[in-house]
Structures are given as structure tokens and as C-alpha cells.
Image (cartoon, rainbow, N blue to C red; front, side, top):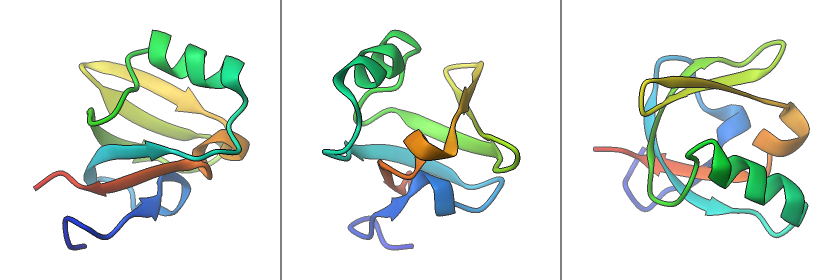
Length: 80
């Protein structure tokens, strides 16, 4: 994955380290605020730990579970 290539967090392989690139326009403002409160902000580094039944990421030593309806609107890119 090139640094410019963005993919949905929902489609990111388990074990991949990525950087949060963008919140999609379809995320509810309240959900966006909640994600910020949990430490998810651009350009935070994340590690994908699981994709089913929820997307789980590691962010600053904290595991965060994200519903697929939200994870599909989070865009990430290579952390390298």
C-alpha cells in the first residue's frame, strides 16, 4: 500500500499498521466526537487487531472496538 493510497479501515488486513487519514462525510457528528474522545484523530497510528465481529484497533495502547457501519467510513493509509 503506497502512502497516498487510502483504503477503508473495514477492509484493512489484520495486523496491518496504518495511519488514520480521514473521516468520511457519512459519519454522524456524534460518532465523530466519540471517536475523538477515544483518541482516534487524524493522523493517529493504528494497528488492526480484528475485523469480526467488530473492527478492533490498537490506538495509543488502548483497544477500541468499532462497529462496521462506522469503520467503513474511516479511511486509512500506510503508517510507513
